[in-house]
Image (cartoon, rainbow, N blue to C red):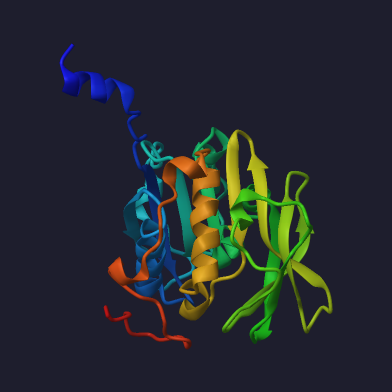
Length: 268
């Protein structure tokens, strides 16, 4: 047998990269920069291929063109929802968005995604795994793992992480399939608010976090490590096949600015 052919047979081939779709747009957040933070920051840590759909302007009632299709999530392992469309109140529209997740496509929900699609049925909240209607004032907060039990998503998470800035959501209910992974103390409610969790929605795995209002939170290495692992977990993949060594000197962007900015980060 040809030596090269024999070697090819003996060396296991890499599985294909995770195919991830980022949906972003709507009000109240710097999505122009955040789409770069999410895609560049996670691709530097894992084998992920990104498609980004930014649509809907800055309105809360936008119906983006992608969701007019019944098979809008076809071909993707996981969809990351980082959008803010609270005033789209059509239950049929909501159902078309959650249907592929219910059927098995992974989902990652960031910050204002938890405040979307308030159509009166509660289906979006069932998909999210938590119900939230409001947030508190803007201040940094301490994020603490909810239990000593390890979860792969928190593989590199410290015992306590103080966000550089913050807008902590108030969670009034968690679903039957919600598993809290981390909490933060609210100055307003005096409660430990769930801010990182997993959820099972039909056949789909859901990873959610209410952290991420500010670019500085999202660009923090602790957040990006957690987000990367959340994407892998939601896509039902094994970390050992997808994580790669992170070298900040070889990334397109280095996220080091401690304060929020409306300008795109500059390569260094």
